[in-house]
Length: 279
Image (cartoon, rainbow, N blue to C red; front, side, top):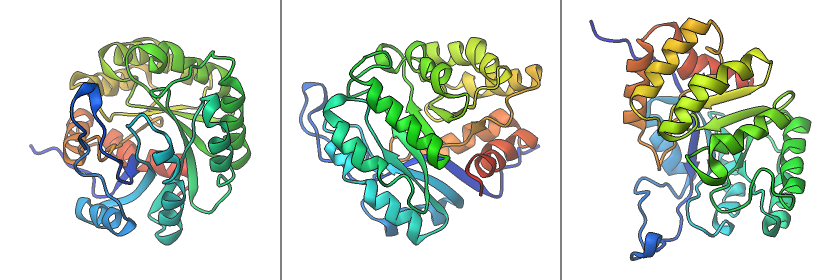
């Protein structure tokens, strides 16, 4: 029997904007994000082609210069105000050298269509770095004031590891929704999140959410099994493509297979997005 795919899809985390080529890892300048879109029209065309009904759209990032991402905040706000299928996520930074740019970004937090703020430690900073605490408090304070979700990148090791990023859940998620992008990121992160932390946070009343983009193949299926076993958490997982760094078709197919086309499928692909963002 063919697994039923959801008719309506909401994408909880994708990007808009084209970044400058960069010589990653000492090689020649490259643009590995080949499906990056520069314009709102291109974004809307992608949503139409995919059958994506709603999407949370965040400035593209990935090169070691955050000014390119900060410069895209007004574009994602414009996209959200032009088409009500789009919600905007604003790029912010915990780094002290980005404090003024983050302050400018947070000034847009009350604009129509803004639904999230994005944090990443890939470019520096740390959860316990005292020079980052004022920016972190400002980001989570703005999210609390405006009812926004804070998206935090997770990946194994260093400042983005779940051992570190999880402290933000402990510190802020009593009254601010924290979306852990990439489900902990990689083997160690998946096992820490699914096997240890996620269900404890949910049971403790933390407002913690995640998505299955970038997940290793076993993890979404294991997560679905553990949600059923624990009887909690089905309302906290969302589909995300992470375009252009992810692959919509691949992410979509894997999550449909993991959830079996039933109630969890509808929750992950549609209803949890609507509940979290008040759609």
